[in-house]
Image (cartoon, rainbow, N blue to C red):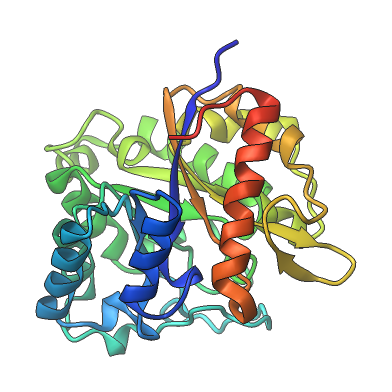
Length: 310
């Protein structure tokens, strides 16, 4: 069986806070892609459009493309819901920090300016009684994002994040089972909202951003059944590793996640020919070196399972 290729990218701020550090690392390691989340410690969603244009032009001049806008969308409390997760929220964001009152349109404009075909989203900080339909029902923000995603042909990638309602692989699979069912049972009025999209728009423009290490960090061992649910929809993954006993993130290949087995299991079920593989090092004390080690680790793992990294 021929496994899909991995389109290698690194989340820029995992290397260092400044754009210069990101670009120099990319050139040093022959990287052509950087996912963008923050620059100078500021989330792009908090920046004015002129600032984002400057970042985009600087990256373009450096010969670097941006496959994903790593946005913090929905990584905050849901309206009327008190977060109960209690864990540390990495890269926390308050939508009030967005310079545009319409944060949805602003986020999509950022993705367009960056030329990013993917945009990450979350599922609100964890609260009791969450149902998959809540993400679209509590506000109209997801529906509006989906409409804009269809217009600009940008895929929304829902990540399993432990502090959020969709926090592990089982919850991610359950979300997409519910989403598929809702799409099949949509009324004519609901379908008209997405008239510019496919007959099952949410399944095309809303996809799972599978993070295996996030799942392992919660104690979950993803099941074959859940991977089988997610793989046909998967076009992007996040890559990092965990020292489970120390409860900390380590460079890819240095931890306890059995990446050879996990990556081969997922990719053997994926239906696309290429998957965006974004390294999310999460080692801020030694970001540049840890990311370099993660790149080497990925290439070792890919060689072992016979996957091309491009």
